Amino acid sequence: MSIVTLKILLEIMFLTIVFLHISKKNYDAAIAYGIQSFCVVLILFNSFQETGNILMLFIVLLTLVVKVILAPTFFTRLVRKHDLNISINTYLNISLTLITVVILTAIAHSSKLLPLTTIIPANQTLLALSLSVMLLALFLIVNRQGAILQIIGILSFENAIVAFTVFAGLEQSAALQFGIIFDIVIWITIATTFVSMLYKHFGTLNVTSIKNLKE
Image 1 (cartoon, helix red, strand yellow):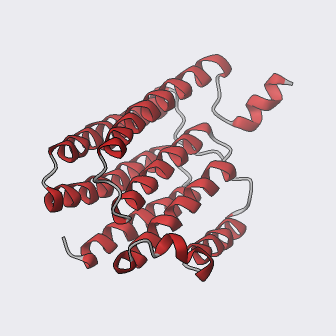
Image 2: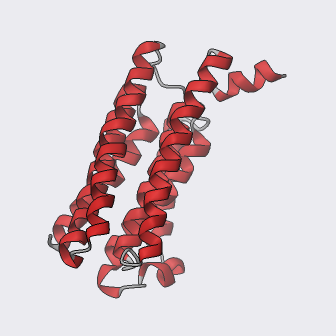
C-alpha cells in the first residue's frame, strides 16, 4: 500500500476514536470499534506483504477474527440482551470534550514528541497520527462513565499501539509479534469477561452508579 492509503486508514482510526467520544449509542460504538480494528488488520496485512513473514499473517488473521468479528459481536449482543443501547454520559460536556480532543491531537503533532514521531522520519505523519489515536483512547477511558465505552477505549489504545509499532518498524521482531498475539487474546478475554461479570453483579455498567452502590 502507498503512504497515502496508510494515512487514510489511520485517519479513519482517528475519526472512529473521535466518534467514540461523542457517540450516544453503545451499538454504534461497537460498530465504530469494528471499523477501527479492520483498519488495523489492513495495516498489519500491508506489513505482511512487505516482509512475507508467516507469523505476521497469523497475527492478521487472529486480529480479523478476534477484534473485527468476535469483539464487536460480543458488545452488540450484550447491548441488545440487557437493553444498553443508550450510552452513558461523559464527565466533560461535548464542547470541553472536543476541545480536549483538539489539544491532545496538537500535542501528538508537536515538536515535544518529535523523538517518538521521527523514529522513522519517512513515517513521521503516520507515527504522529498513531500517537494521536493513543492519546485520545486514553482520554476516552477517563472521560466516559460507561464501562462498555471504557473497555472499548482500552482496546482502541491497544489498536493504536499496534499501528504505532508497525510504522516504527518494530513489528518484525519475533518477540514483539508474539507479544501482539498475547496482547490481543488476553485483552479481549479480560474485557469481555469483565463487562459480563460487572453487569451481572451490579445490574448496571455506569461506573458512577457502581461507585454509589459500593458506598
